[in-house]
Length: 118
Picture (cartoon, rainbow, N blue to C red):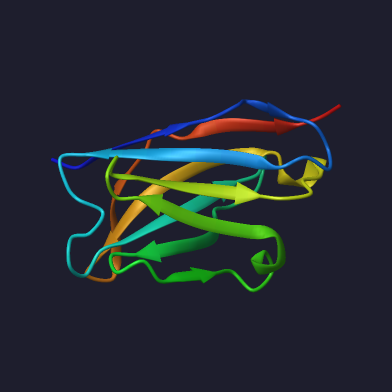
């Protein structure tokens, strides 16, 4: 059973960088065919796909977020991370990490609330 757990600060000031880490257990982030994503849900809105890092390390981002989003990984720790620069209150959301495999997201973290406020 693959498990994912998000971690990071719950409060970030405007213009700062939001950094979150997803720790994966029960499976490897280098498993062939897998891709490891960040997805968020702003209050009162639907899910927004942000991007992913694939099992070989290549990255893909939402066009609307690409300019200030970065996803990286640490294979020695089986973790992948999100950095979102120059945040605004509109970046307030519950942030989820998830595993994509065989054209579906089959495992999700529980989500972590991030609030952008001064």
